[in-house]
Image (cartoon, rainbow, N blue to C red; front, side, top):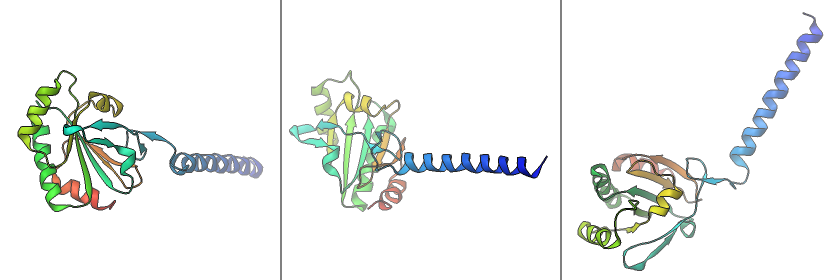
Length: 171
């Protein structure tokens, strides 16, 4: 091979690397206009109405870390997640917690009776629509949204100590 063809190959490779770097930068840091339901994206906005008629709209909580729990009343791990959220709430202040029951088969009266029995210390709502918006396919699904509205964590059952470590990074 000649020196000239080696230089051309090097230039082609450098050009491809440069284009890839520019694309990565554009996708990752392009003003945060991309929304979605996965880590690294701006959280898709939604509104739910909790017990007693209290409304929660995610976009109105910018400036606060928000922990979302998507769950069902019949799920054993969801019940355990509620306990983890209680322990988390006792140790970490300044975080908004919202539990969203996503079972479309559950009637409003049954949901209200269940929620009253549990005695939540945070907003709890029944919204299969929010579950569909966030593409919840397994419960519980825990999502941490930072102060700027970006999803920083999405996972299954999450122990309170792990949740505390995750959240404190974004406070």
